[in-house]
Length: 483
Image 1 (cartoon, rainbow, N blue to C red):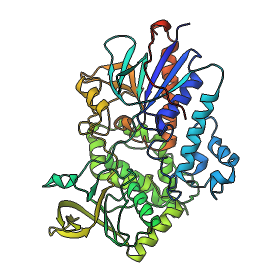
Image 2 (image 1 turned 180 degrees about the horizontal axis):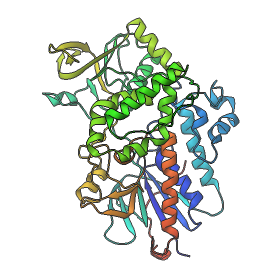
Image 3 (image 1 turned 135 degrees about the vertical axis):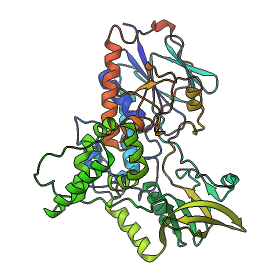
Image 4 (image 1 turned 45 degrees about the vertical axis):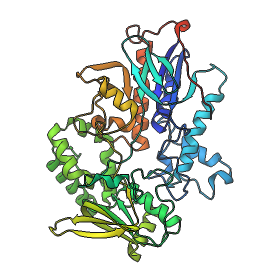
C-alpha cells in the first residue's frame, strides 16, 4: 500500500496535538512530518516559560490531551518525581505551572518517537517553511536552506504572532530600545533598573504574565498598565452548578445575548450561585452561537462586547489574582483606561501621552520601557511572516473578513483568494479564530484537533480523497530533529 504523508507546519501545542491524534486515527502507512522553526517542539510560546509563577488558566483536571482520557494529564502529573513537580501538589482543581504542561506535551511526543512499530511514522523537522507549491500532486513545501518536503496534505499550525503596535504620529519610536514589541521574547523585561517605571500596553492575561515576571525579578518601581477600557481578567472561583431553570436559548444578536447572560447571572446569583457557572455553561455552545451570528453582529461583538467577554471567560488562577490584587493595593500596579497618542524620549525615559477614557484632556506618564501586551496579532495582512506573506501573495489563503486569522471552512480547510475551498491545505488553532472564535484554550484546541484528525483520516481512506504518489517518488530533503 502506498504511503500517504501529512505535513504539519508548527510544533507548538496545536501542531503537536494534531500529530498525536493523526497517529491514532490514520492508517499505519501514513507518515507525519512535524515542522518547527524553533527548538521548542511540543511547547510553543505559551508553555515555554520557565517561570513557575506563570500558571495555567485552566485547572489540571481539564487539561488532558485526549478527550476520551480526561484524567490523562493529572495521571501524568501524579507519576512525576518530586524534582520535576518542584513542590506542585497534583489535583484536579490545581492551577499548575505552564512549564509542566509543556513537559507533558513533550513527553507525549517522545513516547511516539520511541515506538518501534510501525517505524518512522513521525518525523520531526527543524526548519522554516517558506511556501507551499500546490500546482501539482503531491504538495511541495519549500524550506530554508534550499530544502523541500513533499506531502499529500498540509496543515498550518502557526500559533500566535506578536501584538500589533498602536498607530501613533511618529512610528519611528517603535524602532528604539525603549519599546519591546514581543512580550514573550526573553529580553522583553531584562536589563531594567528595579526602581524604574514600566508601561504595559494592554490589561489582559499577557499583561498579568508581565506583571508577575516583574514582581518575580524584584521590580519595585511603578508598573502602569493601559488599555482602552482598563479591564483586568477576573479571578477563577469554584462555583456551584447552575440552579435548575428553564432551558436557555442563546440569541445570535449581541444585544439579546448580553441581556440573556445578564439575566441568567442574576437568577443564578439570587439562588446562591455565581456568574462563573453561567459563562462556563455557555462554553459548549460558543462556536455554534458565533457561527450562527450574522457578520454585522460579529463585528458589533468585537467592537463592544469582546473586552467584557474576554475578562470573564479567560480568568486568572487564584494565586496569580492574589498577587495582582496585592500589587494594586500597594499602588505599585496602576491600571488606567485610555488610548496612547504619542511617545517622546526625554533623556533616559519616555513620556507616553494618552487620552483617558471619557475625557478630552490628555495625560502623560514617564516610563523606562514600553512593552506591548495588547494580545496576539491577528490581522494577517499586517503580519510579516514569510510563509504568511507567500500564502497571501499566491492566493493560497486569504484573511477572514473580521481580521481574526485566515479564512477557513468548518472543516478547517483553507479558503483561497478566489473563494475556493482547498482539498489539501488546512489550518488549526488560533489561526482559525475567525470561523470558530474560541480557539485559544486547551479544551477547545483539543476538540478541534480531534475533529480535524478524524476528517483527514477519512480523506486518506477514501478512494476519491487523497491520491498518494508512489512511495519511490518521494524525496524529503530535510534535516530531521529529535527531542
